[in-house]
Amino acid sequence: MREVWDGAAVEWDSVKIEPGMRLHYGVAGEGERVVVLVHGYPETAYAWRRVVPLLVQAGLRVVVPNYRGAGGSSKPPGGYDKHTMAGDLHALLYGHLGLTQPVTMVGHDIGMMVAYAFARRYPNLTERLVVMEAPLPGTDAYQTALADTDRLWHFQFHRAPDVPELLTAGREQLYLERFYQDLAYDTEAIGPDAIQRYVRAFSRPGAMRAGFELYRAFPADDAHNRAEVKRDGKLTMPVLAMAGVQSAFAPFSEAMMREVAKDVTFRTVERANHWIPEENAEGLVKEILGFVGPQ
Image (cartoon, rainbow, N blue to C red; front, side, top):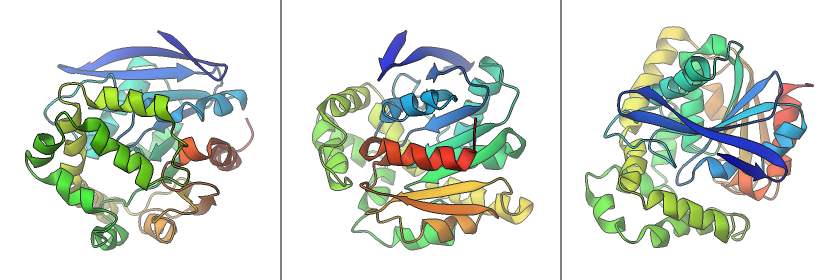
């Protein structure tokens, strides 16, 4: 299926990467250099609709997957640790799409954790890493962030067995819209069309459960990430860490990434809180293009 985002044609397809697991993804652009955009929760790849056209115009090829459990991808009972989810992306990029060159991984929110796991698991296939708007399990900053129960109350709620599924069933829009409103610089930035798409996606059977499983995997992610840094040392590829200028993550994102990577650049994005790709796509893409260099 083809969808046009502000003049950029996105070709959608899905691929079976293992028994019972299909990954839904879009591809846009014809450039030789590839950027992979990994969305966060509670969103889908549609979160990048304002970013993709700008990257394509700059001469890049862009891949936008719906990761395991989101959008049109399968929602299996397990596999939501970010190491496994990074393997999903590797199967898509190098098994199905046939890429041979390293890519630039860009992750927002939960997608940031997946992008980091990809860079850690496949360093030779990660040219550059761009991360934003999440505390990374396995860092001291993550442990500090967990104490901020006023802002991150949902981390514990989502991890409770069965309870979040029970309490949000039939109330998906009421629950999810709170995040879109409370974590926004401009509460209208995401827009009603995108919200309806997200709500529809998360109202599908198993979708809310899959979203909560992302959080239930945090203890495993924490242990895995700490073990990898201890075993292999810090990442060596260039890393761009970003945060919205009004985001709660802005004060600690740089130090957090310096715990796990040697070459870190930090930038804040103006007119943005948590939802940077939708609140200020132009500002985000300006930083990405400056980081990846001329095409």
